[in-house]
Image 1 (spheres, one colour):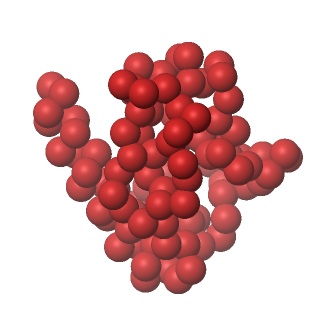
Image 2 (image 1 turned 30 degrees about the vertical axis):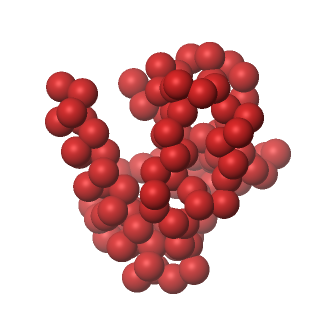
Length: 102
């Protein structure tokens, strides 16, 4: 199982931002447009066997060593084009990771 969470999330669990929604649609990814971001908390950290941080502005110092890895892909949510490129990099990384773990 995979979950996505953030370290700085709107308390109301704001819906997926419009630029991300456009990118997901362009990449033919089905998602719930009302789904909010989930706050990374101790329960999620305990639940996870492995934590992958895909953000260049998040410190992993407070996350458990040994089960946390920071992926060298910079955030880019400024334009739709940059977001598509970043999303494709993440997708490629995840596919390679799945092959390694299989």
